[in-house]
Image (cartoon, rainbow, N blue to C red; front, side, top):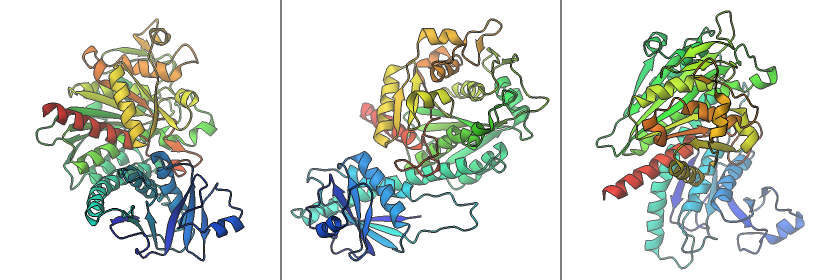
Amino acid sequence: MLKISAHKESFTSIKADVAIVFVINKNTKHKWIDQKFLHDLAYQHKSPVLHQQAKTLYIPLGSLEVDSMREAGATAVKTLKSYPFKSAKIGFYTLPKSSDTSIMAAFTLGALLGDYSFDTFLSKKQPSSLREILISLESYDTDSAGATKERVQDFSKQLDEIKIITKSVNITRDLVNTPPQIATPKYLANYAQDLIKGTNLSCKILKKQELKKEKMGAYLAVAKASSKSPRLIHLSYKPKNPQKKVVLVGKGLTYDSGGLSLKPSDYMTTMKADKSGGCAVLGIMLAAEKLGLPLEIHGIIGACENMIGGNAYKPDDVLISREGKSIEIGNTDAEGRLVLADCLSYAQDLDPDVLIDFATLTGACVVGLGEYTSGVMGYNQKLQLDFTQSALDSGELVAILPFNRHIKKLIESKIADVSNVSSSRYGGAISAGMFLGEFIRESYKDKWLHIDIAGPAFVAKEWDINPYGASGAGVRMGVRFLQDISKISKARKQ
């Protein structure tokens, strides 16, 4: 793993193989920038460029903002992977004196996440020579030694937190990227059990017989045609004197063929990523435990495969969910909501103060919000706004999709309590969210949020800090939200 460290020494005095320098808003008038080199190169300020002789990597930035700096961190690491440099240094000399460490933290997070690659199955790997980035925090000529030392201490604490979060994101990416012949429901369950060894997390696994005892008829129907039996993974973190109880639920479809409503072949090729919600829940739980958050947290992952066969559940079937509600099946490719319905029922028995599910639930969410943004849904407007702010602060893009009574009518059934698909092609992300809402008890409606991460969970073309493949969507926003409600609860008690 790439090592990043903070230093009180000046940028010039730190020894490294290469320097990283920003060209901000095309301004080349700075002592660390070789204006002649860039002029002779006819530099267009569109991509990074390496000054080989000076051993300096110039990275263009439109502005000194957190989002831009996070992306710059990823860009720097990806660029330097092509060169034999083992160490790089950077100094945030351009920051205003009143600045906090958020800009530096964003660069660090971007660098650590930009360093990720999934090369498990490549016979010829391309390892990076870059081992370390050294950050100078002596950013201001007028700073006293005491101020610099204090900034190093503050940022070093922040750096520890960033490392925990990025490790959890990358573990989530690895798990999502693991192909379906390996990452079966059983594999996910064993992986979770192995991963939590040595932590304060506990893990309970419910197999098919336990799911039958729980009367999870919707969940079991989805898993019926697969040769791989389902697993419900229940992770728990119970610190002393928790401020609140939070339950996270994740869709863990290790593969989704669409069932008898078979997907076109082009739409099957990324379906290993249909477990992204469940993997995100695992990543959030790991980070929360490492950060020692003062919350009781449970993670429920509904893992199974949606396959075809003579015993597959069918359009026209009527299923009985754990909540006792009947569901008319209009399409077997709307399976994630069936698994989540029973998992959310199980989760409510834990009596949470906050209940959140993460799922790659609908292509309609991608159509509505694009590939970069997750949808936030629920009944409690304040809870939606609070989560949205936490998500945006974490660097993940989200937008609220509002429920309304007219869309609810679209999932009505004449022969069952509810239909698993809408009678209209429009508003599919919202109708799916409202379907889940049918299984939320009245006492928990104001405590529940549904997060549709279908857009950003799997990346076909690199963007921001995300490489090709799994992005780890949901982890950063989930962790930040847990941190924020911890701070609010603590402040109220004081």
